Image 1 (cartoon, rainbow, N blue to C red):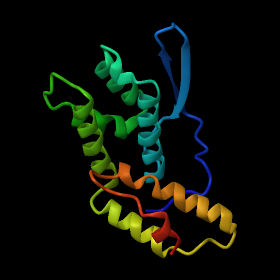
Image 2 (spheres, rainbow, N blue to C red):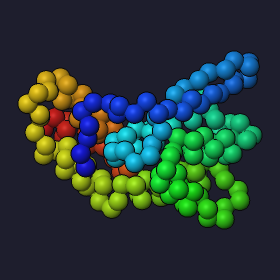
Image 3 (cartoon, helix red, strand yellow):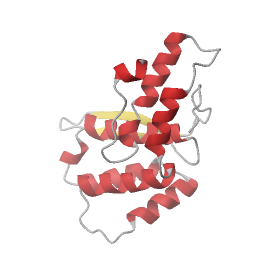
Length: 165
């Protein structure tokens, strides 16, 4: 897996809104994933999860509908087509566990087999790029490491101690 050092130049974003119990509207923007890098995909999954958790979306009575709709809005092109295929499984009662299962299936399809193994090998064997400071490289490695738990069920990121070693 290769990672971009700079953010994607594609400004294609989707704005997600949430109205709390007091009627206040809060907004967050997420990048739309179409066929970018694995890192862009994992960033979307992580940030969408943060959005759902921050606003306690699953507490709403129509949570499943809005979560599926909003996640789909964060996808485009072949990624959206693949998502539609995965969720077309006949499930009538969608809830948090069903959604997590769909996201894990989707992630497996996007990243392929052996993604965690490849990721850990990359983190432990890739030398620091010459044009990057040590501080930037450490920050970069920590960021990439934070995506591992989103790659497959029961995957754990590398401990900071092992990462530094």
